[in-house]
Image (cartoon, rainbow, N blue to C red; front, side, top):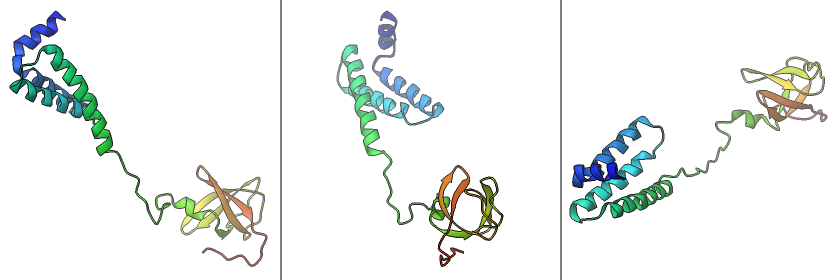
Length: 159
């Protein structure tokens, strides 16, 4: 505790401004936005110490409380907000294929085949079927579409 008191006595009223500077430099080096709010708390304490004579115990207590308050407020004020969209699958285009009917380009043999959607060729998994068979995409497993035979001969093609 003695070295801390010596540093506080040596830097005097500028201690918290030095601490704030160090914390802001750490913010530049570390990912995220954590040290910024600790630096803000140190600046607030540094400003208070310039106008009010506080003991070092009160300064540290004020810094601890202000650190918690600034972190809490920053999380509340800058929390990401969910954006409602009329196209929730815009960046998940493969989700748009589920439930649609397509024609197999290659047969499904031993549970695997290929299906062309637009200008993309997809690996599909499902029961063995012949090329030209109508299939409905029922799900996605990684980069593989799961398909099922279309039993209704009057089903509409999506393409």
